[in-house]
Length: 139
Length: 486
Image 1 (cartoon, rainbow over the protein chains, first blue to last red):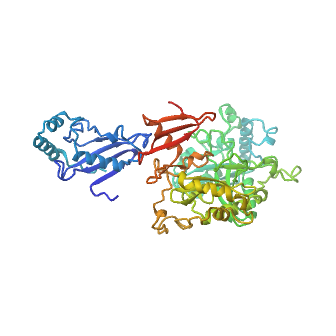
Image 2: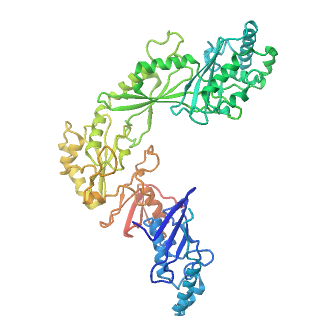
Image 3: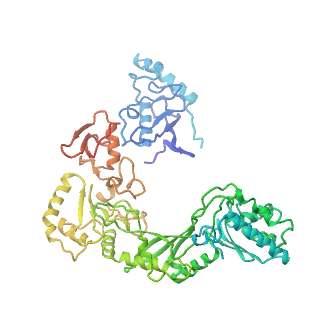
């Protein structure tokens, strides 16, 4: 899978700690932004899912603004060894395009979407993308 | 010449390390008082092919002191903490006024180290050296003993006789024990391991690992290991090294041979060749499979001399494990099909029906091809050189995944395990999935599912786990021995 829109690499001194740079999907407020993910691969991987967090701040209902925690079913109870780190990152990218306001980790974002105020949500998400969304690979 | 304190025969004459040391120093004092100096020379040979370690001896008058050390770089500065020797060398080392270790430490390479050492030892022994001064030996520990030079000479002679081409690898066992002051720590069992290449009657090469004793004697036999197939029925595929029975190595004519000892390398070779003569047919059969069938798991799974099993691809998603009896390789082999029931069911019936036509004059592969009614698919990659440009076809061959789809490995562990579970043998029954799993991996996965069902077998102690395939989510079942609920 040639990925021009994603970079995924292990930390030099620790094969169980991976980093990824993902790109915000088009036609979303995240378009043009780059976001860093930190991926902890436990000893029981791939039986248990990796722990993926956003390092870059992002405004999204299913991503905690401070801790970067992600609420995504395939990283929790719907995990299967069929997923790889790369496809899991793709699922995170897909989550950016398809927010689920019903299980918010970011209540502000969730409330905007549930209240039907898509404009406000888009504006806020865009604001934070411009502010923070320029992560680059640090080695 | 004293062979060193570990030699059993020497123990009566030389009782303690202290005595040996005192004797040695007394000799030195006497020798150097008569003449201005004694004959000194240092002999060193690389102990490793990368020149990171050397061994040899210091010839000091009538004494020969074994010496072993490693270097910081190939042939470079000597690691002072790595120097090993016997108690005499240690005694020498403690005489700072004679042997200036600081000067040795500053030598930039092994050559100048040896020259420095010779230089210092050739100078007269300082007069302030009453032999009794070294009776403080109570605190001395017995030190590591490298073999006396005669041992190496004997080894060289024997290797010469065998032919150097047959010596694959010769490496010292790393000395054990304390490294902090260099001359401490008991490395009494310091040995050399030698890998001999021995050819069988069909020209196949086998490796025999020989552990050489540091003090060979007629009563000490080298320990030998080689890869031989397991003969017992219950032993599975990957048996490891098989040890020789030492009694087999006893030559008939040694009881009265002189104490000048040898390593019996020629004998090791002959005994090994005798031993493997019985397996020639077996390896012919295995070679035939390795050459003409698609053996799963890549190059490392082929030509495994110690294994009596081969996993062979028969068709898309279906393979079989062929188990050959090493002592009767041409007899009907034990075959176990792996794959979806719809595919392997008919094969199993054909095998039962056709087993009577088995022709022991033909290769088991040819027999199986005749019984199953199709030729075995050829290996997708050429036997020499893996990968690049290997002619995997466009059909199912190209898409064949040999590895477990959970851990992406073929063989688990180091391959020495006898358990069948270390190769992927469980197939998803969904014909659009058909992925392979190690039963261990699949079991771990199924046990994490909250809705897994367990069905206990009646009389057998086996349990069937029912869950879903991690890829296609269709139901998958796995039979296991017992289930832990932890």
